[in-house]
Each structure stands twice: as structure tokens, then as C-alpha cells.
Length: 179
Image (cartoon, rainbow, N blue to C red; front, side, top):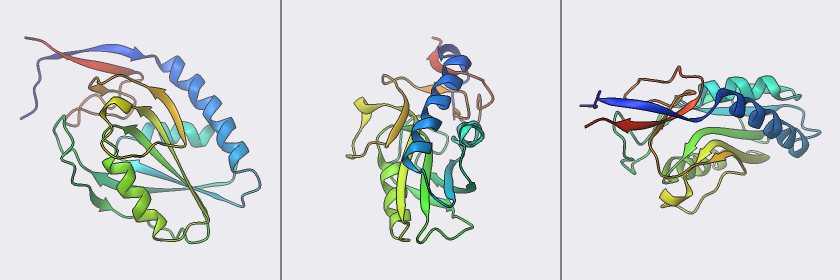
């Protein structure tokens, strides 16, 4: 059962997130310059706010699709067992694909999703993560673009939840449990 005795301290402001997304969009546009259509794949559920803001900043022809993968459930620790709960609706063979992840922690989810999607023969497959916790990495993977590198803290907000709570916060906040 999830704890309810916690407070949230702002770690990354909404203004900082918006500025970083604007810069990341320019890098992505340069990398995918000339592509007919970029398939932007959001990993549900945590990336939905990030993907919405990111695609609005991209000056590219984009198609948006979603994949739901889970290794957390309602807990604070990865189970290390990644399950695909919802597959893509569209075809990605021969197409340029950008996978949008909310946070890379142990690396299990992103690594699994990349292998899963690469098996479908995209022309190019690149990855972006809003947050990266390299100190927690157990799988050798790094997103092609990262919004912010953060310390080993449990965070919520901007689409990221704790037991389905706090996704609607406009900032990234650190969860601090009260004793």
C-alpha cells in the first residue's frame, strides 16, 4: 500500500522544463531534418505531458503513437521485469522513430522498449528522456537526448506519478516522506 505521509519539494520548475524542451526540440529538428514524417512514440503513462509539450515545439511533420510498458506498478522500486501493456497502433518499419521516456532510472524499461521496437526495422530509432538518474543504472543504456540529469531521488510531477498521484503538478518535485 502506498504511503500518504509525504511532502513534495520543487526540484525543477515549470519554466526550466519549458526552456529545456524548446532547446531539445531544436536538436531533434536538426537530427531529423529532411525526414518525411517523424513517428514520436510516447511511453505511457509518465511521458504524456512531456510528449505533448515536445511535439508542439517540433517544427517537423509528426505522427504520435503510444506504447505502454511497466516495471513499477504502484511501488517506488523497479521490478526489473518489463511488460508491454499497450502496443503501437501504427507501423514503424522503414520510418524514423523518436521514443519519448519520462525518466531513465535502472534502464530496464528503455532498453527493453528499444529492443522491442528495433525488431520492427525502423529506418532510425532515437530516444529522449526528460529525466536521467545515471547513479541508478543497471543496464548500459543512455537516451540520445536528456532533459535533466537528477540525483537518486524519488520524483513526481509533470506526468510522473507515485501510485497514480501527482501527475498533474506543473514541475518536477522530490518526494520527502514525513516521519
